[in-house]
Amino acid sequence: MKPRLFLVGILVGFIPEILNLNGDLDYNAGIVLQLMITMIFFWVTEAIPLSITALIPIIIAPLLKDINLVDVFSPYSSPVVFLLLGGFLLANGFERSNLHQRFAVKSIIMFGKNKNSLLMCFIFITAFISMWLSNTATCLLMLPIVKFIVENNFKGDENQKFSKMLILCVAYASSIGGMMTPIGTIPNAVMIGFLAENFNLEISFIEWVVFISPLSMALLFILWLYLSLGISHKTEKINQKKLKLKYESLGKFSNKEKVSLFILILAALLWIFKIKINNFLDINLNDSGIALFSAILFFILPVNKKMDVILGFDWFKNIPWNVLILFGGGLSMASLIMETGLANELSKNIVFLNQLSLLLIIFILTFLTSLFTEFTSNTATTFLLLPLLGTFAINSDINVVTVILPVVLAASCAFMMPISTPPNAIVFSTNQINISFMIKTGLVMNIISILMISFYVYFFGLSFL
Image (cartoon, rainbow, N blue to C red; front, side):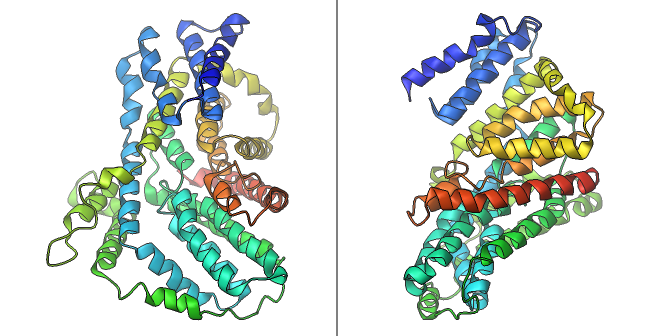
């Protein structure tokens, strides 16, 4: 805890009251405005742990009038919270079985024959794993493999730039890959939960994957083309002897890996054929239930004659409970901003955007979100903007998804600063990349992603629902 920043945050929350900036707001909206300012300050400065900040709506709830406490508490148990919990359990089982490392190393041996193909291989493997694991966990998994290859193949000044590109691609691909599934990164789940809680709009797991995958794949392909421009001797062969020895050290395909692969395939098939299963069996199978059902199999299916299982009684130690609380608190805050009418009042400050074309509105929102996320948490940015922009969209008679989807996607596309995303910070900590190189390289990817997200959502966003 940072006591001084904590006190400053409390004082900052009272600024609207001190300066009489909330004169046109009713009692509840005024309280929630102060709550929102304080929570954002705490999230940005980390004066107290992020998850503890997320519990503040529960503390403030008794001060509100004519607000049902259930409405404040219920977002903490939103179905999307359980989807994330199921996703974390699946990722935990995936890691415990060591299937992820076998998949990554084998793919690199098969497809990483030269510098150019190795770069492509790392980008797409990292992105695929990041669809299921968090982008942070994916980056931590892939970075040792990258360093292993660099140390055994690309020593010397002549390979320094390629080594940097190889390390940096892991961070960027982790962020882009996370865009492809609702559990890949928190902003995705925030949007799904926000739409369900406030607009009664349901987006399924497979709907998200089908719609976002073409955009993410295009960004990954452009990332490869862009980074490959700086590669000299692109067709130079890679010495894979030590990499093959590393793969051999993993041993034969174990029962743990077989069970893990079965569970992941089962989960994917259930998400894909959910609607057909519901129609055929006349049930109401949902994405959260599929995630939890699949995750529970890690506790049930034996991997040997001793009836050992992949996940045991210590499973809770590896679940990021703080993220689940953070997610619930953000949804609770967003719900209060909508319910008290504060979002409607705040949206009046951006009514001038109505004078612009829809494409220009989308571009501006995408650009500002990408810029904000370079210096703040993408989760905090998403929690702040969704209620404001959701209300703006309704008041402006614009499809709400068309307005908030680019914001959510742009929150994952911050490539310039080490503090922007955990993957950026992780690769920067290797001391192989200096900040000027990251800013220069990331700036181009920021511009490309802003343009691609804007045009993609403008032309295809209405087909999302």
